[in-house]
Amino acid sequence: KLDGIESGATADQTASEIVSLLSDQNITTTGTLTTTGNNLTIQGNNPKILFTETNDNPDYKVEANQGALKFLDSTNNVERFTINSDGHVDVTGNLDVGAGVDVTGDLTTTGDATIGGGDLTLQTTGAPALHLVDLNHNSDFTIRNFDGTLQFRDTTNNANRLTVASDGTTTVA
Image (cartoon, rainbow, N blue to C red; front, side):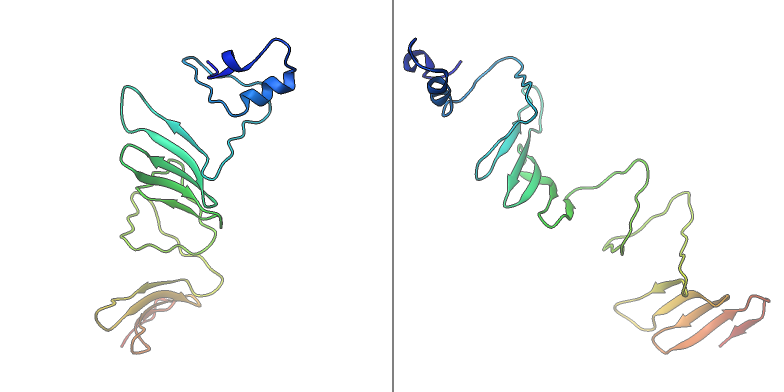
C-alpha cells in the first residue's frame, strides 16, 4: 500500500511525477520485500533497521549513530556490539569464539585469564617473562628466560632469588 498515491496520481502524470509522489511515502508490506538492484540505501541522521520478532524476545535494532555502527537489544535497551568510527569494536557481553583468537598487538585484561587444555607460550627474541605484580604489596616478581637461564626475579628489589642455568646449576639467593 502506498499511502496517498490513490488520490494523488492521475492518468496524465509522467513517470517522474509519480516517482516524486512516491519519494515521501512510507511503504508497508505484509509479505517479503525484494529488491533486484545492487544497493539498498537507508539515509538519515540516525538510519536504522528494526528486527521485531512477533513471537519472542528480545528484539533487535541495527543503527548508524554518530559514526558508529551499533547492534542493540531494543527490548532491553542495551548496546550489544558496536563498531566505532576509529575501527575498534566494543562487545558489552561475553564474546564466545569457536575457532581461536589471534591478537597482533598488546592484550590487556582486567579480569582473570583461564587457559584450559592448552599451553601458554611466551615467545620473543628478547627475554620472555611472566610478571607477577601485586598492586597492594611488595615484592613483585618476574619469571623469565634470560639468555637460556631460568630466573625467578624480585623486581621490587632488583635481585634474582632463584636461577637455573642450562647446565642445571642452581643458585638460590
